[in-house]
Image (cartoon, rainbow, N blue to C red; front, side, top):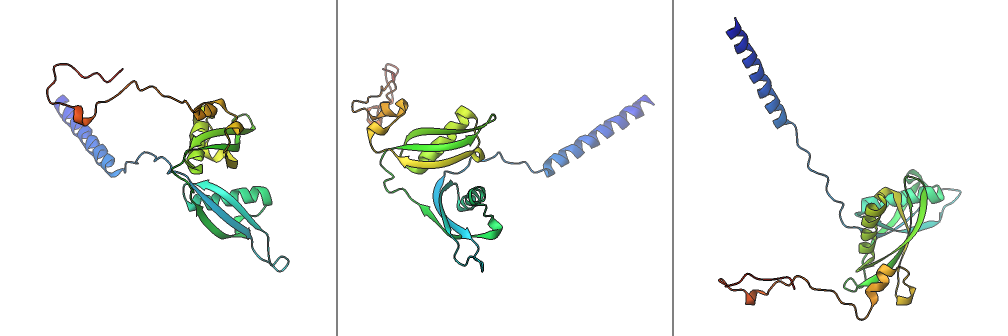
Length: 209
């Protein structure tokens, strides 16, 4: 009797194990969330739909930073509904253009005015970044706000982005220190060039000075 009960229990557990294995095979494994692609700058122009009362409605132009044109249109309608009470159902997109950097190989200083919502309220802020383009400066802004203030992408509203051309106009000391003419950086780790490498050596290489 005990042997039969043990055999029945063993068979039951084996069938459950087989069922769980088959279930795990059938369940699709979700890939981890991907990092958002790099931001692009778009110029979006829209307006209210023409009507008999207003056959030529006013045009509204915005410069939106978004990963693609779909998100750019969504952000445009979000701000237009907040500022001018025009919904997507009652409006239309006249044009959407991607804005490219004129000098992408030149290092520039950028000043950015933002307004973001924290867990305690709404705050205005001005920050400066040293990047190659406006899009890279805004990308650095989102990463900085996420690390320092735990601010999400949807809670940050960019008000204005300008290029600070004069050194005297730079406000933040962490950017002003990078504009010094005698700027130097230490080189603690120096890897030997390939031409200096040998197969056999009597001493270990030292790359730290």
